[in-house]
Image (cartoon, rainbow, N blue to C red; front, side, top):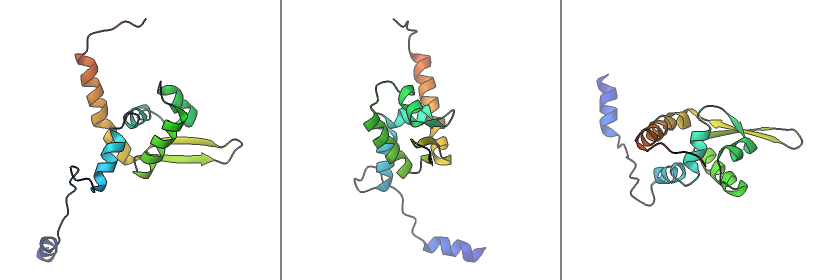
Length: 123
C-alpha cells in the first residue's frame, strides 16, 4: 500500500481549467449549456427517442440545429446513437451514464426555477 501511495505522490494530476480557452472540458460545458444542448439532455432524461421525436419534443429547434447538437453531445460521450439499417434509417438517441449523471442537476435546476415562477396560463 505504501508503494501505491508513493506512486500517487509522483504523479501529477492535471486539473481541468474551464476558464482556459484550450481546456477540453470547456467544450463539453459549452455543448451542455448551449441553446439546444440542455433541451436535448432534458428531453432524453426519461426515455430514448428517435430523431423526429426529439425534434417534436423541443419546440423551435430546426433539423439542422438538432443534428449539430446531437453530433456534439455524442462526441462528448453524453448521448449514444443507434442506427437501424432500415429504409429510411431509423436513428435512436439516449443518454449515456455520463449524460444521465448530468441530468440530475439539470432536473434540479428546472424544478427550482419552476417552483419559483408565478403560475401562468396558456393562451
